[in-house]
Length: 560
Image 1 (spheres, rainbow, N blue to C red):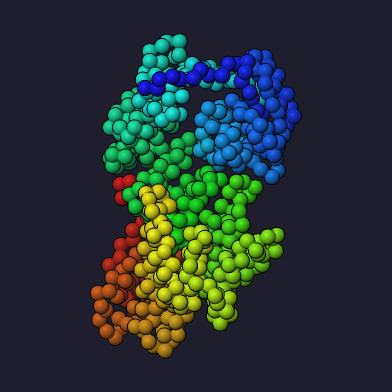
Image 2 (image 1 turned 180 degrees about the horizontal axis):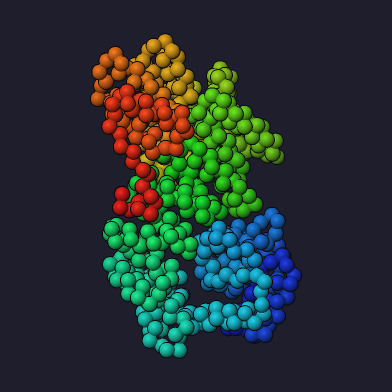
């Protein structure tokens, strides 16, 4: 148990920072707080001034408007202040906003502020609510201090004592939530399960249901968790938290395809979280979803603007993902994306200091664009002098360099980079596990498959036209390995297999491949001509394919 717990700051010594771009808001808050004995109130109208004040002193309370200024919103400012330790575990944070959309509320809930006040603010309500938060700060101080110090058993000791104090009745719900969180932190999941089940007899709060679901998932009690998950995904106040929880569960179980679907839903409901979009990008790469990769990095670039996450590297990754998608598509769509990538690259080069800072990265992207434009000689000239050395390069820079070498047919350089990257990725973090799996996947594919999806499709078309069916089959099978969700490749593959079947008996591999391609297509959204072709090939090949509907996300635990 902690030997000494410091006393909380006295009311008259508390320092309050109000960050809002509306003068009336400052007047109402200051007036209300002065009325209840708060003396030290600082008011700022923009993010720049807020950061300057926080550099000078630490504040006990920060009241932060979601719309601070045109260049930075409260979400980004909160992240920055927390990153700089101007907001820490002892700071009481209150968000202010006139907007109450579900997307905004989800984003704010994720930041876990102490309170959320909806504008327009009323003086009396400010006094009542602030006094309540102040009393929490004083009366529950020992419990919260122990939680902040990671002394969860001691925190529970104080919490249990507080629950016996009738004068703290109005805080009992908050105290009980802390106890539940402590059980989970201590990894006592069996006790946590019983605790949250008992709480459900009293409360229908979102945190009770989420806590019980966490405890059940940690014990792999999937059938019991399933019923709760089904209900939580129907509730607006728990849907986002449930998707996020399921994503983390399936990542830990290394079921990355299911985790990806959950993460997409969580990101859709709360899109501003850069780290989640980063994870979404990693999962999209692992699941060969080139379109999903591009969407994720575009969201990262969009929501990171003017935040601590903003960086030229985000723009680089948008161009890289555009090239990846173009490489998988080819044709008119691929050409359109290639032009967009080239245009975005030129725009990025015009930014001050970019050329000197990211010269090698820009050249590698240029080489990849030239490959897409069928100018491999030009691409080789750009890459001249670049070795497989990845010293000083980020993971994304190294992966892009590896792809450039692969697209030029320089397999030794490509595989050397993959080997070096695998040595760098260690640990049990999300990034290390997912990226290590991705690198293993890349290593197999880059070793066995020497061409891009676009090149394989072109080769297959030529081989089919010349009636070289087996080479066309091999080309398309490899193309589908690289782009397993590509409906057109799958249809072309079935077409070739159907032609082979006219003159000879299919091998087991060809039969299994046709079943796999047909199953993927039955689970995809096809237009009328595509559906007609699919049914034709299924009939010609006499495939026993039962249309398997994609499992509903609500039932995903039962199907896993």
